[in-house]
Amino acid sequence: MWKVILVAAALVGISLLALVSYGSLRWTEATRRLRKGLSSTRKAGTSQTIDFRELDGLPAPVRRYLTRVLVDGAPLIKEVRVRHEGEFNLSETGARWRPFSSDQLVTIQPPGFDWDARIKIIPGLEVRVHDAYVGGEGILQAAVLGLFPLVNQRGTREIAEGELMRFLAESAWYPTALLPSQGTRWKAVDTRSARAALTDGGVSVELLFRFNEQDLIESVEAEARGRMVSNQVTPTAWGGRYWGYERRAGMLVPLHGEVAWLLPEGAKPYWRGRIIAIEYRTGE
Image 1: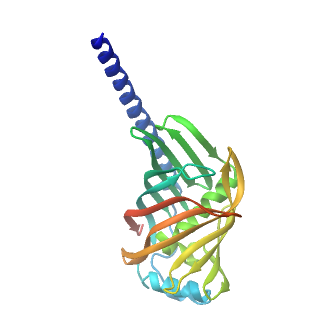
Image 2 (image 1 turned 135 degrees about the vertical axis):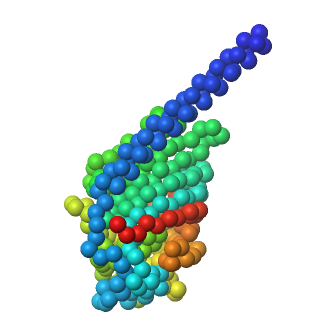
């Protein structure tokens, strides 16, 4: 009897291991296809280096920020590879935080990214997530073990706008993207904030950037970003915070951040993370 139970348990274990391996292979292939799409859309810019002369006429807090975090004459960023660790809140209404790790590839011209994440539910069970903006299309996919779909949203204007907002908000990690020559348009608000707008094809977004006393980006906010509530996209105020700035490849970038939905009853954070590795590619 015990032999039968042990054999059955071994077969179940082998089957689960095979399922996990198959799911991982399928997800890796999907990631490869997404990132191939990013590479195929990347285009060359007319300028290859930072030129502080283009900062003339920008709102004062933006000009102070860019001169603080960048180096005049340094090469422009073309591509970024960043790895995160942190916590993700899986609950729409409460707090169900689970650890995650992620690998993200970003292209600057045109704007695009793929966030490939693993969220651990319980030991041995994880949800794989693609949050991406590729070729003007927004993509949000989540699947248990990379096999069993939970979310598959893509191709709508709401998703595209939401993902382009994320690209713009995360530009603190690749700050040359905030230069006017890279497509970002700035509008003055006050001495510590300014609005940034970005257009990619038919998709346009705008965010409010707030700067602290050290002239660094402290937070970003959007009046509305698509939020998934009961499998429906609901426009909701949204924002993120940055801290822990350090020099990386000559630029001053934040290594810690938090993202939240800004609800009437208060902020509801859903992403808290830190950068554990970041690599920049410059030139052609």
